[in-house]
Image (cartoon, rainbow, N blue to C red; front, side):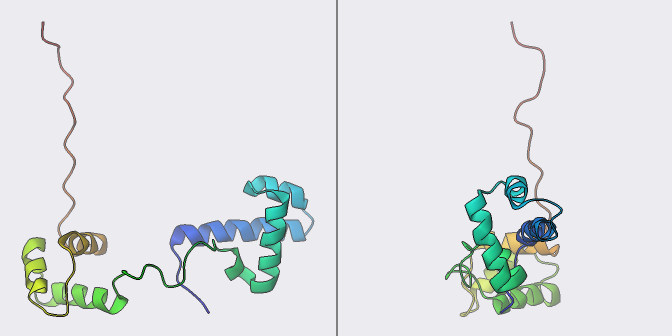
Length: 141
């Protein structure tokens, strides 16, 4: 079963695969491969066994739980929110759009989640630039 992984997770798995393939080709030793990856020899043996059994999928971090968080918002809801914003509320502010979503019985999602989704998709308002903490200047005497 193919799962969707974050870009960083795919890059880490590709690096592991590259090093393991170099060790299989005897370009480097398995001990050197373990040192390059920062693993113990024992852990690299485990990783090699997973690679032999599951292929590329076996190189991903096993701590990523199946299906993610039980509180995660479904992909269909994300698509519906983006569709509504682009088709009906494109000229509304994020706050107004969130209030309109709250009027729908099936959509109970937080304002922050809506704001982050719109910003990440490029549909919503831009992030506000952070203010400087202090201005450098002459000290008082």
